[in-house]
Image (cartoon, rainbow, N blue to C red; front, top):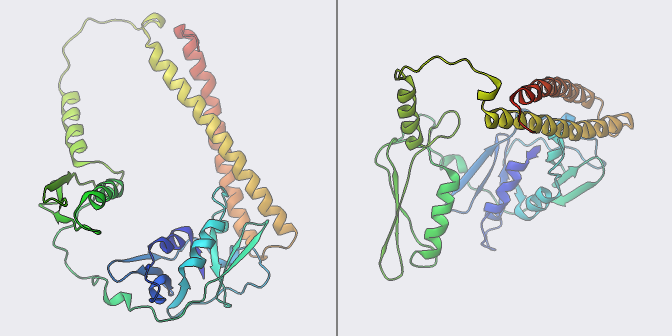
Length: 320
């Protein structure tokens, strides 16, 4: 069973109660990884893109075929998370594999780390807690996770008691959500948070309204002005310079990213040649090499655009 970084991150949400071994662990079944402390519950589905057969051949590892709920203690999951290399650009190496020996394996092609994940107890029936797929919600609203955390942290530190309660009031999907709590001396703390669009890039409702007004303003007929023929002297030097600077940065960044990606692929190729990987992993290598070819073409296109932009700067007389 392959566990991604997002699944191992659940170790930060396990229960703190020493007497509840099962709740101090991740529950892993054939569908997802799940954690709960009795007050909240979080599930993360297993990846459908990453395959166990592309994981490096690792001494002692036989991947577990999990059908029923299995416990993975939070300490082992946390340790495996720290052992996973963050900068590696090959996705399968940024995972841990649960073995039949109840150990988590991390392999970065240089070092192999193992962590005993066995835990005692029985994980709760989490599916009984999740709302049914056909359940009709009262309201569905999108909120910025960053802003919710920021406001909740503030209220947790300044609200009454060791664990202050927050009253959340939702008026409609398009209106601000109200968050309230009380200080130790009874004063009301009130925060309002604008909702965000649930599809596409995150945009506050307020920003969408402003964008709409701006669009209407731009679509209005512009006042007539005398004709003028653009000349190099009338070209906006700042605009041309900023544009070229962005192209140069993009080229440098893409080249740096490509080099890092190539280094990892070469390492992956060498490991395959040394038979450290399963034969089927060669198919995974071909996929990464295809991505490299796409990246090379992208860098070439960006690099080809840089001289044109520099020529435009030269024509404008800007010292770049």
